[in-house]
Every structure is written in C-alpha cells, then in structure tokens.
Image 1: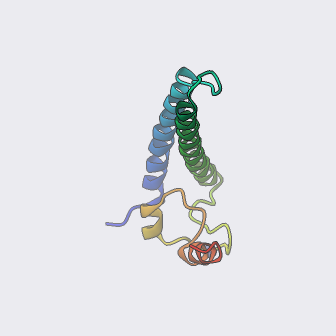
Image 2: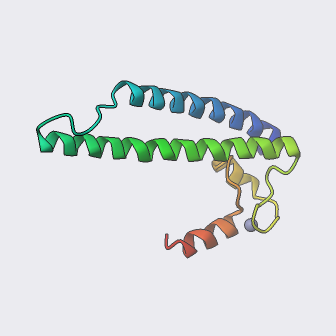
Length: 119
Ligand SMILES: [Zn+2]
C-alpha cells in the first residue's frame, strides 16, 4: 500500500508538534541552567561549560532547522505544492517523502547538493 500525500500531511503535523515540544523543552532547559561564564575561578570548569553551551547551541539549531523545514512542508501542503522539488520542479518520489516527509528536494537534486557540499 502506498502512502498518500494526505497521510503524509498528518505525519508532518505530528512531527511539527513533536519538534515544537522538543524546542520548548530545550529552550526551557537552557534558561534554567545557563551558568554564565567567568563566574568561577576554575578555568577547567569554564571550559566545560562553554563546551556544553556550544553543544546545546548546535542541537538547538538542528531542531530549529528541522522545525522550519516541517513548517515549510506544511505550508506547501496548504498551497497545494507539496511533493514538488524546490529546485527542478519535478514530483518528489513518494517513497522519498515517506522516508523524509519534510524534504524540499527530489533525490536527484539532494544528491547533487550533497555532492557539491562535499558530503
Ligand atoms: Zn529536483
């Protein structure tokens, strides 16, 4: 049985909820335990905190990026252009959308982009 775009829309809405919750939790956790740097006398402690904050930042950025992609996919669904490649305008393979419902690119364009990015 093939998944329909309508079914993928439900998947996207659920993903959006999941990532919005995740983002809220991460931002709440960050506010609670932002230690601030420079207040301790131990350089090693400061270094650890900076490292933790950096890790938090990149994880937070990853979640924000994913959430943005999901929201864009939902918006496209509403506009009736969901499943169309942003780069070449061709239909994105439904199997690819099943695997990555928020992808804006068809497999060809994604591979070209990854290749160009040196991945
Ligand atoms: Zn394409």
